[in-house]
Length: 513
Image (cartoon, rainbow, N blue to C red; front, side):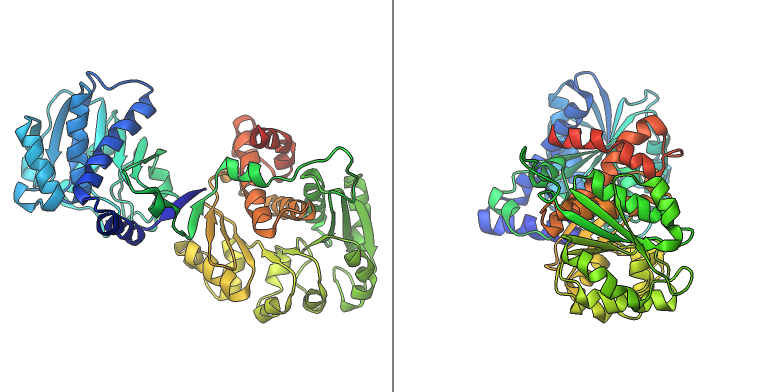
């Protein structure tokens, strides 16, 4: 996993590098400029000799990184022009020192402090370096800076941003305009704003530059992480040749009602296909004919009904033997939100003694009843989308998305559970306050039923003995990876929930290598 930081955390790390290890900020800036060159060379797959490169520098430390990069680019044989989007007198500290160095070694520098001085050579660049604004940017670009950003976005050049595309805020917000980069070279650690939308759309390929921060600072406790493929390989359940269906775990799924048999079947089949040994699906008798036709390998349990489309508390004694013989419970997809169904859920949850995954209507039925979550003894994984979590917290989906990391973290800590906040990116929060962001997935997952598949994946991994937090992390990553593989053939338009399962074998092959 790679650690993720926000601007305040990055400033603290820089400060500690200087105070505890006596690494001057000037050296960190030097390493950042060198990192820009390394990132560009990796992106191009070759050297930079004879490339025409324009470097646009703001007046802050991000501009200082650009000035250092310009020097190293010239050493690589590139034809470099620097455009200082400020007056020389506005530069301070390390940026000022690197400006003086650039002048001393004869780099071509043009000051563009205002729109009156806005002009460019007729010969167009091959590469543009964006070093206008850093991670501390807020507000909206205006005047000459805005004009320059528009020119960059309209150019045919390869655009590489230093640390973050200019115009992207610290939580990924964009006010009117931001630089659209082909490559972003971020310094030291991945920044939140490069992973969160809409900022993520401006990043292009992401390269993390080593700027010389000591390993002991890297290793110190972080609380936000980007999931990587190797993390999934490490926790993915092993198959043993002498195993049987009991070895690989039993999942009980309670899901479905009239009109929502698909939610039940997708959840159950997904739990089975991810590797669990036995899946039982308990659902209302009214949809049993449909489930019998859809599912061959899943054991069906027909639940008697008191009235159409409703689960009732009277079903609990009937379910107890199945709960005792199961390793995991998945509950909620398609069960509905009628009063009796809500009563059934609220009466059942405190009885549960096995890890459980609550999704969809299971979450909706918790509205106004969240304290019941603290009465559940085994591990709980809750998998809402922003609308479902917003209903629980009396927030709009937009309000949830504006602060999805902190909202997910606070909810998980308050109710002592694992929260999987679905979206772009999906955020997994632990009861201990750690947050994991998922890099896989695409808009092909934005259709009905995909969440049911995710519930099945997480439940199936839990049944095989994967720790609850790792089950959530692995389930989310694999779910998105199936979509990333599948849309290459199906496109994001024509990708359906059931297609996730079609590409699951390829995803597992890719993870296991």
